[in-house]
Length: 310
Image (cartoon, rainbow, N blue to C red):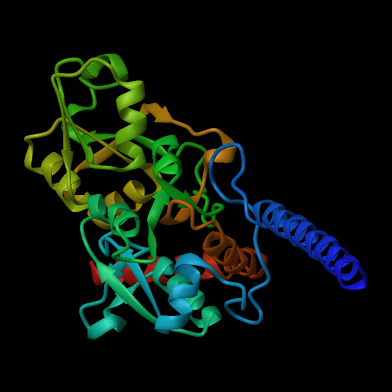
């Protein structure tokens, strides 16, 4: 009888322990869900303390980066001053720009080696979605489509101009193209997969043809060569290009400007969808850069270098 009573007590105790374990597991799961979240616009605007590097409870891609000892970053290195190639340097050091310095700082805070992987702009987001690269850092703007497909960080660089996207044309056409309605019989070009393409497609509904090109240089060249009549571009970058290439005879159309709502503004880092903890780490580095003003200092430094290399 005593043995039977002991067994009953043991069974009750075991059941109690199991119940407590389930409650603890549920609480941990809830805490994990609350710890790493996106906001209502599907980008990550919270951050973690990166002082001690990658945390011990890292999961997913962040854990893989720590185990591999390497961070792989996808970029299109043809968008100065954020990312471009310095022909006087070799190897990984030839990839320069404010974004590339940020990539190096992220790797440094992680305590791992950095590998910059150059590719066409249309491939950078696919590279993180397919697991080929861990992050995409390539002057990426927010769009709802991107936010649905990949994880996006908080913004780290904001254009100094109030309007981020506009239309540039050849100076010879300034009397023929003064507003959106004048584009109905024109050929428009934009970089494929860019914010400029998305905003123009939403805002300009009448045109003869809208061509998407792989590289931003091709966009400018199409306009200069005369087989495109107008180009949708980042206005701040375009003004710098026009200033550095006065012989191009290009100009921005004053009456055409597209703006983003404030919470969508800013260049962002991208990662595979679901890698929210990784984005918290990236945001921790972004917080550091914004607080110190270092990113803006890099931007100005490489703006001058890009101009000197022209």
